[in-house]
Structure formats: structure tokens, C-alpha cells
Length: 215
Image (cartoon, rainbow, N blue to C red; front, side, top):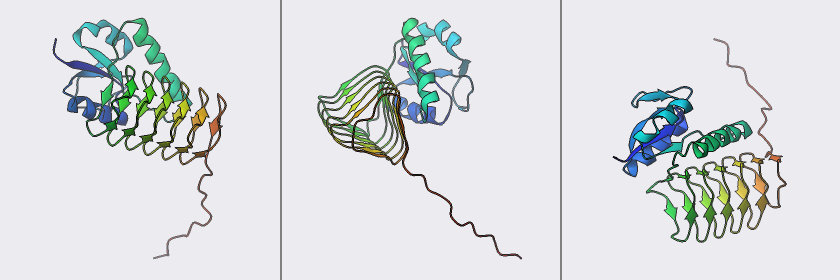
């Protein structure tokens, strides 16, 4: 069988995943999604079709991004479906990423361009490391964690399962983020976060809106 991979998801994040897959020598078998915006690839349907066609590709990758808790939950449903139907999950690592040799990586993991993951870090299944994030030494990242672009994790950080960390968030060394939590963009985390928490940095406010000059 040729090196064909099924992509689950048909939006913007899927485009990034496909680029990394092709850079690793995979041929895109097709797109499996509730909707599809990727005109250059064959669209087959969704999970039932994926199950029916599973003998036509070497494995699948969940290319559905996570920007909130609902996305994380949706990904978990698909993860469970793939396990129940014995569909292999392929990890995709950009050749432009820097990953230490001692890092242990689970199944279905995505590591994007310019990511840096330091020594002795352990990564659980189905986690996302988006462009430019930095993960320090000896971190533990559990299953179905989404780390957005430009996030910084200090050494010995623990991220439990089903956590979303927003763009440019910073987490101090040796901090633990409890499961099913959401860390908002630009947050600075200096102490442990309990499970099922939502943390938001102070959002910007519009104080003055000037009206355009009359013609």
C-alpha cells in the first residue's frame, strides 16, 4: 500500500496539517469532514465513510483545530471513534520543527513549523503544537492538548488532558494545568490551575471610536 493518509477536517487548520503531511512524504487519500473548503483534495464524507474506507490508507490524522472547550470535546469524540474502529493515527512533525531526540511522542500528534520541544518531554496522543510554540525540558503533555502559536512553556510543566492553551500564553516552570481547562491568549500563568478552569488575560477595550470626517 502506498503512503496514503486520511485527513479528518476540512478547514484552515487542515491546510496546515496537509502541508506538513506532504512534507513528510504522505499522499492525501482524501478529506473526511462535515464540510469541506479544500478543493484540491477528494472529499468522501465524514466518520461513517472513514470507517468504510479504512483499508485504503495507512492511517488518519485529526486536522480539526481547538480554540475553545467545544472544539476539544469534538476532537475527543473523534479520538474515541478512531480507537473503537481500530483506525491508526499518524503523528505529523514538521521538518522545520526542532524536537530533541529524547522526546517521547504519542500517536496522532501534530507539531507545526518552528516549534521547539526540549529534552525529556513526554507528549500524549492527539496533542497539537502549533507554529512557533516553545516547550521546555521535562514537560508532560497529556492527551488531546491544544497549544496555540507562540505559546511558551517553562521546564517541568504538566498539562493534563483536554486542555486548550491560547496564542502567546506563557506558563512558568513547574506549573500544573488541570484537565479540561482553558488558558486564554496572552495569559501569564505562575501558579497551578485546577481542573475545569477557564483563565482569561485582561482583554483590550475600545475607549474611543472616532467618526470619519464628513465629506
